[in-house]
Amino acid sequence: MIKTKAISRRKKKYNFVLIFFLLIIFGVIWFYRFQVANDRSSQETIEIRGIIWDEPSKFYSSRQFWLKGYLIETTIGQDLKAGDLVLLVGRPECQLIGKYQKRCLINYPDISVVKGFFWSNIVKVVIGLRKNFIASLERVLPSEPASLLTGIVWGNQGQFSKRFYDDMKSSGLLHVVVASGANVLSLVALLEKTGRFLGRRLVIILSLPLITGYGFIVGNDPPIVRAVLMSGLILLAQLFGRPAKGLRNLFLAGGVMTLFDPLIILDIGFQLSFGASLGILLFGRSFKKIFHWSDLATTLAAQTLTTPILAFHFGQLSPFSFISNALLLWLIEPLMLWGLGLTALGLISWSLAGIVGLLFWLPLQVFTWGSHFWAQILPNITISDRLASASLIVIPLAWLLPKLIKGKFNEQTV
Image 1 (cartoon, rainbow, N blue to C red):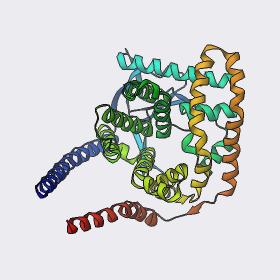
Image 2 (image 1 turned 180 degrees about the vertical axis):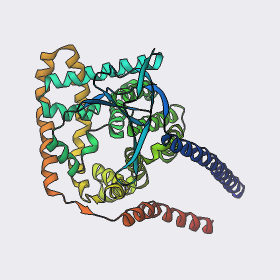
Image 3 (image 1 turned 30 degrees about the vertical axis):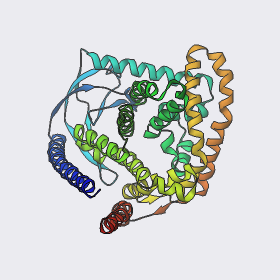
């Protein structure tokens, strides 16, 4: 027994040393790539070759799109569309947006469309599918419910009215109608529930390509990429009978993303997505034991880290938004399932989908009424940068310190 414990102790020390050296290597590589990315964004003239992942949007007398982290502004007459492989030469102008996030804009660069290859054709197919899926719902539902459902299912927020957008933001519910990790997690939960009769192994094998394809269709925003990577790692671990350790997979997914794009660590969407997942993994189980209400416990756990991040960036927070989330989030999973089914039905028959779509009006309207009600009730308070920064350090320590004390106590009692 003593020999087994000694071997286990040596193994833990070996794993700790290995992880420590891997973190050092990762840190050196990331710091080098971060410096290169920062230097590149400050050059006078740069050349970029890449695929346009989203349809260019009209902005007054110009069109805008994102390309490899740069916001490109060009003329209306420039014939560009999602999936085009382009080569452009221009001068970036970088400035801070908010307090700490930097955005680089390239105004009217020289752009030429290059002959596409495999990935550009894949992007064109994906964008075409997404347009058809969104149109399928918009044809059979009124504008406001259609905007809400296409936001929940396909991450589309282009048709939101200003009042609805402000209500969702004030009530703390905006995350469910934009491209976020919640979309992917809802799909994973639905696949697990609807595919149980097929067997666990087959469900996982089918889920991996479905989740990846869904991520491509919804968009390549950091929260979506993070959720797809993390869900894929967990499913692969389950497929091969390995323990699916959430914290390890979260940091592995975040590490892969920051290695490919070092500046993504400054993106508020990435920070919120990572912080929400970390909060759930650290505190979710404890809160469920305390409150015995899954939606409330999950919301509170996620907000332990997202709240100080929002306060750090915007200087304001809504401390009671967990109430609106706990009372309305239960609608998201059934709406996700119904929305996917209605999308498929709308592609087959508009008239039949229109009849079935009447069943969606009430739950969608309940969500809309609820967001408006809580937007009027819930207060926003101002918080200093110093307090927000301190809470980002103190909150993880509140989880780590008891474990360290418990581990030390157990070691002394052996």
